[in-house]
Length: 201
Image (cartoon, rainbow, N blue to C red; front, side, top):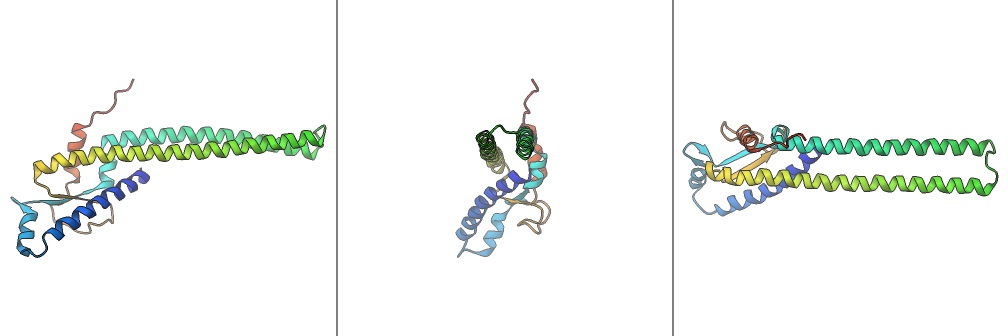
């Protein structure tokens, strides 16, 4: 969870930073009291924030995607561990035979050594391929979550009159805010109302 939470937070913070700059530079040269008036509508803040860590821990889609991702990772790690242990066993067997003159000829010993080297190379290649695949899947997972959350916030912000929705984490960029600025809980509830988990087959 931490990995894609960090990536998602990075994407959200960049987007928010741009909006933040555009919003406040557009107000330069105007009356400062107008800025305050724009931030408050009917007692509700137009600038609010969401704790992304809390959101990702409690949003059903996030939980489902993360569990599926971790399950795949566990299966891949198990496969790699099995292959690595088998290769280690073969290497020890080769060393034992070599020390006890178990090969008919030096050519046979060299052929066995080359075979082990090739198997080791293939194992490293498999590990690299799995790592790259994991990174692609994590990127797709982050994109799916990002689109789900931002699409929801686009409509929800219109309904509630929010102009900017900031993203933060524990000890993040929002160090203090008055009550009413943190909309994390209401967003989690609304997202989960719209979320429909996959039925077990």
